[in-house]
Length: 247
Image (cartoon, rainbow, N blue to C red; front, side):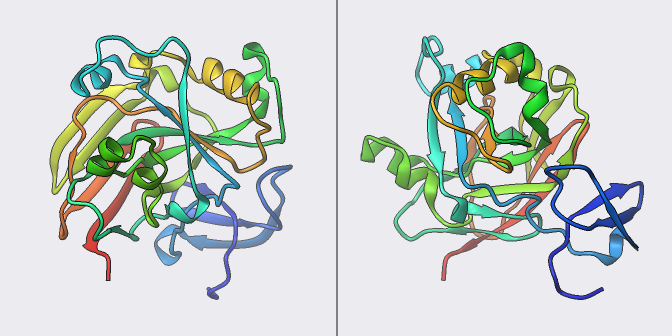
C-alpha cells in the first residue's frame, strides 16, 4: 500500500481502511490489507495527554509515600512526546535515570466537559497501551514534572485502540529485554476510569483523541540504550519500543 496515513479497523489478521477518522461512525472505504503488510503508527495524535500520578498504592509506596493523594494528581505530556509501536525511545543527554511506566491509556471519542461518572462510557472511544517514560532524576530535582515527562518520544502509544475492554480485568505488564519488571491489573487502581475521566473533565474540556494515562503500578525501573521495552495490557495487545541514545 502507499505511504499515506490511514485509519483502519483490525479484524483478526486483516485491516479494513476507513474513509475518515474513527471519531464518528466507522465507514469502510473498501480496501482491506493483511495486518502484516501495514506499518502501525501511534493510533492517535492527541491535542493533549493528561497523565494521572500515584494511582496505584504499591507505586505510591515504592516512591516513598504512604497513601494516595486526596484528589487525583494530574500532569500534562505534550503531543510531541507521542511515538508509535516499534519507534525509538530516545534517551536525552540531560538525564542519567530514565525509567519505564506501563499504563492503561484511555482515548476520548468526543468533546466533553463535566461528564458524570455514570456517563463516562459515552465519551470514551477505547483504550490502548502506554509507556509514561520518565526522567526520574529530573522529576526529583525540577520540582515540577514538565521536563521529566515531556521529552520527545516519552509517550509511546499503541499498538491500536481496543474499543471493548474490561479495565478491571485487564492485566498490566512491562517487560524489559524479556524480563518482567511490572505486573498488576486495572483492578488495583486507586481511582477507576469513570472517576478519573469525570474529575479531569471538570477541570478541562476533553477533545476527540485526547489521551488519559491512568497511572502505573510498582516496579518502575531504568532503561538504557539497547533495551527493548514492552507494555502488554490484557485485552489489548503489546506495545514494544527500542531504547536509543538521542543523537
